[in-house]
Image (cartoon, rainbow, N blue to C red):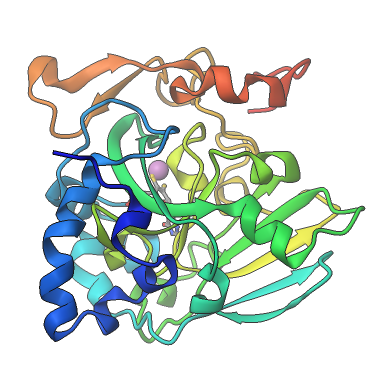
Length: 300
Ligand SMILES: Nc1nc2c(c(=O)[nH]1)N[C@H]1C(S)=C(S)[C@@H](COP(=O)(O)O)O[C@H]1N2
Ligand SMILES: [Mo]
């Protein structure tokens, strides 16, 4: 059987709003093809076996919906993700409020199977659907003095009951250095396993930075700002001694309360799924040069 690529099957802008658009004959025609697309992951993909959809959408961190790992699956259904817009502002040529469909328009969507590791030392392998953050930043035009990208999650306590408690200073926020944001491994994901993102995984659009601990991968993004100063980040605000700005996966730098030398692959049967953690989560060849000359123990 010939391996299909994404572009064989559907025009890219169609992909995002598939749920609304796929009706009747279109749905029937598309169904087998979508299943086949799993066979065509990006060159950036790992060859590790992905976790199941049940694992990926059943064990989550999304504090807007509670702090338990099963809370997001139970409560994220309340979130309205359509319509959705994202404010892009700060040091860009074309600031504005972009409708999600506009934002994704013309960005090459592809499946990328990424290792994903939480700072709590569990990990998964996820077949994301997304596009490079760099594509979007290039489209809006990054101004010369910009050095960082700051991202924020929606604040809507009526739908996100976790936001009724103030233990996090909402919105959840994250940031990257501009060169990290422009790196081809850094994607905005709008789906996984050939479908739209489950809400508990950060629908309708979330960041994925595979060489960093999971908390950098901010969910349900409504704002992207280009700045010349290092942005505040939620986990650093909560506990600066434990969570730095960089948060690169690093087996040699332990979290103050636990080792980061190994991880438990969720769902893996053998040996409890425990395996050695790799430098930069296994993406060392691709990203080590971003940190040349930096002391990674000081810049954790
Ligand atoms: N807005 C928001 N984004 C978030 C979080 C969160 O609580 N709120 N949790 C982070 C953490 S700690 C992890 S490990 C990942 C989990 O992503 P997943 O549930 O898709 O596996 O999301 C990150 N993004
Ligand atoms: Mo995490």
